[in-house]
Amino acid sequence: MSPKNWKIRISDILDCIEYIRVYTQDLTLSEFQADQKKLTQFFATWKLSGRRHVTPEEITKRYPDIPWDEMRAMRNIVIHEYFGVNLNIIWHTTQVNLPSIVDRLNEILEKD
Image (spheres, rainbow, N blue to C red):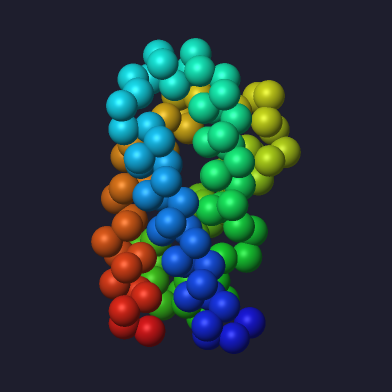
């Protein structure tokens, strides 16, 4: 994978995180759980952001503070276990985990 490709993928992730933030900013957990249309759209967005091969191994080793493995695992759960997904975990991911990596992902894009 060329260096440009992994940067595009990280940029896509950042775009999706922003989309998720905007889309869920006015929702409570209960509203999120009850609104099936938004839930479907969220899963589609998450699928785009949680790619199996986000970055080359060289980058994941250089930046071990990013939860690369967890991102891949979440993608696999959402795609393969759609009806068994725990919405509390998805909500926590959208409200806590994703926002916490935005600054660091932006730093990685600027640095490399």
